[in-house]
Amino acid sequence: MSLDNSTERKIYSASTNGAPLPEEQDTTTVQRPGLIARLPITGRTRKIVEWLSIVAAVYILITAVGVIGSGFGAATGGQAENLFVFAQNPVVGLVIGVLATVLTQSSSTTTSIVVGLVAGGLPLETAIPILLGANLGTTMTSTLVSLGAAGDRNQFRRAFSAASVHDMYNILSIAIFFPLEWSFGILERVGTWFAGITTGSDGGIIATVFTAFGDAVSAVTDPGADLIEAGALAALPDVWAGIFMIGLGVALILMVIKFISNMLKVLLVGNVEKMFHKAIGRGPISGIFSGLLITVMVQSSSTTTSLAVPLAASGKFSLWQIYPFTVGANVGTTMTAMIAAFAFTGGEATAAMTAAAVHLFYNIFSAVTIFLIPFLRPLPVRGATWIGSLGAKNKLYVVAWLAGLFVVLPALMIGISALFS
Amino acid sequence: METPDSFDAALQSLTDEQLLDHLAESDQPELLQAEVRRRLQRRADDELRAQQHAEISRMVEHLEQSRVDWQAVREFLRETFLEFTARPEEPDQDAH
Image 1 (cartoon, rainbow over the protein chains, first blue to last red):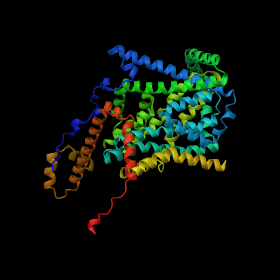
Image 2 (cartoon, each protein chain N blue to C red; image 1 turned 180 degrees about the vertical axis):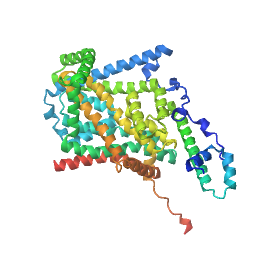
Image 3 (cartoon, one colour; image 1 turned 135 degrees about the vertical axis):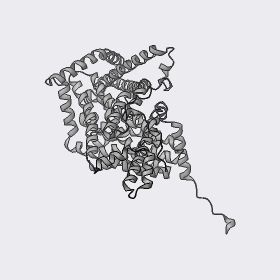
Image 4 (cartoon, rainbow over the protein chains, first blue to last red; image 1 turned 90 degrees about the horizontal axis):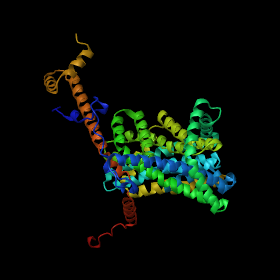
């Protein structure tokens, strides 16, 4: 028997003996969005232009959310509550949130749109289930990414399990918080409280800072939104102008969120890598914070959770290491809706911030509840292991899981709730 | 008399070769075997951690892999459909 081993020399020392981290990754190999890739510039100039393009995209995002808010107000004529009576059934709202996010493949897009709609008059109690559903809908992306590993049974089992741990976690958090919200309105109360202290006139220093920042952002973005509104209202009757503005706002949000996410991946890949290196071997709390920060950096939980899929497929990372990372991604993705809430001022800002805060606190409460209650904590991993094994045995289980989760279950839930309402 | 702590420290200060020599000569090898197991476990953990860091160093590649490959999705669905609709093989008539 020999114990000779040179392994320790290979260990990167971020988490061991303090030696330097690997050199920052060369970012030139990450695929740039087409428009930016075609620009005939290089080096520092390219980097400056790329960061400026992100600033411009955030400007368009905030403007677009403002346009949706104005458009919704114009389209519904202040009668949103009556027009959206079909979505007053919380189950229908939840399903709308799931399906809208499956279609856009971005929970940030869905939540930003909802923030705009709430500012435009959509009742908060109608919006909350949509925000909860967005969390589940976004899990579809990582599951689709895992199908790319189907060529190798073992790799696929690990990849599909890693994607499913996000599904299972979100199913569990909805199972806990959806009935609680329906019965007691906990998230609505906490969201209203948070919006009160951040945008209310009596909120002290926090409200002063948030309001000043919001006013500054609105002063920059309002002219663009006003111009679109004035143009639409001049060319079309109120209702059609409103519908046009909502459509335009949604299209802009879809484009810019995809652009921002892709561009940030190019610019921050080195930082993402460093954060991963630092998180290894530091336990679940570090994993949650890494997932959170990486998601804030790339502005997309789908990117973060999908990134976990090839890492898990490699067999070097266990589901227990992937799990906290996806939980952090859920919390990190709420940042986009918070940014979107700065599109508004006054009462609209309070409504928008309430919706954004509901999404934030739902994800914080889910993480705390599921991670702190010992019998809940292992459930997503157990569920993901089970579905991963089934999927590796027979691909039909994978299709059944996807169809069941995103088609059959929503339809059943609507049917059952319609029977009892 | 050596305390348990000082004995542990003495064990840990041994090189691998010294440890194996002691193990061969010892009448009560349990503690030495435990030290061997501890060293093996630590090295296995370190090995895994090194592999994880190496995997993370391929971040650009993983970011590319984290996009939805619609062709792979279509192929997956096609294969699943074919598996689902495939008939079980006919029994060999000549065998009877």
